[in-house]
Length: 245
Ligand SMILES: [Fe+2]
Image (cartoon, rainbow, N blue to C red; front, top):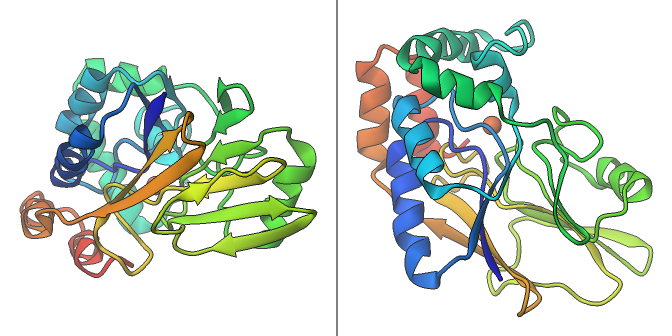
């Protein structure tokens, strides 16, 4: 089975369309989505429609999804994120808000030993950035491979022979899933990368081949940022797409 793994789309239609166009010839049997479908970008309704059309086999909610659909308050958000929340709430149909409300809390078990989570398996809102935090997840959970998002930084934490290593970015020729190894894999963000590479990011899990492929895709950043400015969303959200930080 081949699984297209998408995270942190954030209402960026240009990025999502480019990822799907690039991934289609590589082929997939299922789509898994790691949360943050909307928030920041200027096309939240179209992003919801596109993801719904893909009919993901497994999905979890992100912190922006939760706040925008009213499951949680925006009190922990900075002012640009809060402005984007209010704008996005107005831009979404009732139907799409209901879709966001129905997104489940992670983690979800998507295949034997394979989990999906937004921030971390132990806490959907935690940013997994360093080995110590990853170690707590490996200790407390029994996944062999867990896909995570939230930080918008493509990376992989691997536990091999009792030692944790971190690769940023993930290996370009694919992460081989060796026997006895365990991994936390962040494919990076489709719609708002923050790892100094502004290209959209995604991964494909190949269960037969025993590996995770990782890809970056150029997309029409100029149009996506122009739409943000035209919508009177905070200009820093447009700049961020261009710089990838
Ligand atoms: Fe996000």
